[in-house]
Length: 220
Image 1 (cartoon, one colour):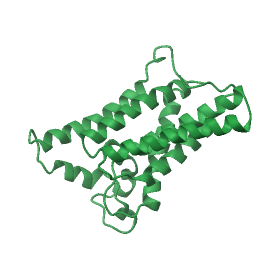
Image 2: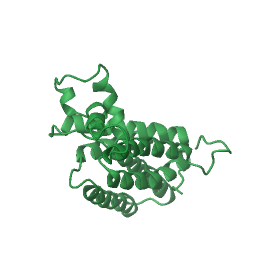
Image 3: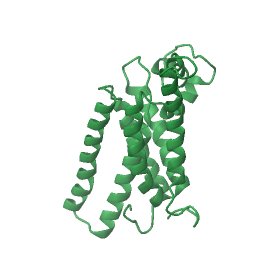
């Protein structure tokens, strides 16, 4: 059920690529924050142009023509600081490796992009703050949703029953709650639950549509 070639098998190169695309902007911004290059205002300017601003969906004037559209993706590659980045990248590496091995690199990427878009849509629809939103957590909660869909399918394929279904669903949800607590701490209490919710459901739906294995396999 994967689309990996022998050369890429066991090497989640798409996960590594996403990590690099998230780490590089934060490294540049950290250097600017410390006065090593550019201006100490670089982080603010970057957020102004790359973060997700709900106000742009409500009549605010964009800084450039495609900003109301590009922000649905660019927000996911920016972070609120080093702690925020580290927590998210550890989660991306852990979840991403398993999902990529199960779905294959390109299906994994499609699920991740769908989750990023779903997270932005959730924040845009249900968010009440005028503050910008940044971070990969929409995509990460989408991967968590993918993990649940794959694992539940594999569990039910092995043994059916109401108790089995309840256990297969409840323990991953408990883990998601704990993940939210960790992210709440890493962001200093600024938790965009709307993004998590939108990303989670988008990831579940995308996985259901893209995977559909004839013989479900447990995640590695």
